[in-house]
Length: 438
Ligand SMILES: NC(=O)c1ccc[n+]([C@@H]2O[C@H](COP(=O)([O-])OP(=O)(O)OC[C@H]3O[C@@H](n4cnc5c(N)ncnc54)[C@H](O)[C@@H]3O)[C@@H](O)[C@H]2O)c1
Image (tube, rainbow, N blue to C red):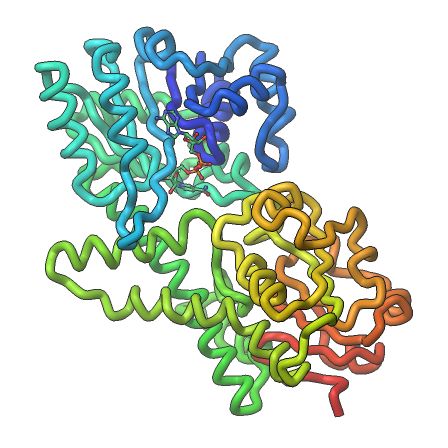
């Protein structure tokens, strides 16, 4: 099947590559000329495990192409996927500028039987508006479907190739059949292909992200209770997780959620409700709790250093919003870095993949360390912001010798309390007592 994917970012590139890998002829389109030039040189501009090999394999097999020339890719396409960004507007709603620009561009070139499928996360009712706009532009009723994406950066290929479920919102059985054919190679383990209205499909994506974000804010709030009242959130987590009604997934306390989806999608859903006269107290609280949680490490550091961070050397392990990605959109580490710089601290950072993106934001104001151990040189404290595997088992003895003071603020609860006390560290974590400070 000939497919065009418009928007070659984290979602569009993975989508296009995985569809090519299952035998389709795919052209990925973007307005970013540098990105397309890199891809045509077989350089993948983002870090996503396994993606580079897969892109190269499919380019070599002549099934995957990249272009900035929208018309040439749209005309022959049977399915046109929309995967452009839908970032947050100043008022919290989803900004659909890119999506509407694309609709206007593709309309004249859309084949009579082509289906436009939205993979971007878009407000409920957008499918209907695309249908209406295309009718206005083409004079006919175009086929418009919705197919929200649930992949997780870091394991995006696995998620796409072996989805828990595929959700499609369609206006006709024929569109459902076409999309089912497309997804058949990915559903061999009998995972469900769920057909619903476009509105339900659009809403499903927001509800999934809202619930996941709620779980994170919930456990973070419970961690804050523990810190004040003496419990250990890790024990509490074990105590609740074995309850089959609760489970363990997404109940890890930390420094707040980031990334390109949860923050903006929670706010966009709340904003949609408000547009319809409904105020979501819960979603606003989830968002507020998350904002506070991003400041939890600064608060702990402020208290420990009694407000005096000027000239202190602070090392940071982990900058990406989560492991196995280079994505730093809304990453909690950015809030911490900004605060440390305001406090006139010297900041030394390491991340296996996200340093180039952080350099793009902070330039020379930070020291970028090639090796994770380099951030520790004369450090007054180490802060762990992302739970990369690289940080799970460091050489604590060497670390202690290298640091000016053996102080760790662990925003991801990577280590055992008793062991950290025995190793001679002052160890702060989330929702657990601080050890080594007595
Ligand atoms: N990143 C995720 O984990 C994830 C997961 C599920 C859903 N989503 C949703 O998927 C959508 C895309 O997210 P992303 O993370 O891939 O964004 P992204 O910013 O990585 O990619 C978007 C791409 O669209 C391109 N673009 C913008 N305007 C264009 C135009 N007029 N024509 C062609 N290309 C254009 C940009 O240059 C960019 O390369 C969003 O709606 C997001 O909410 C993202």
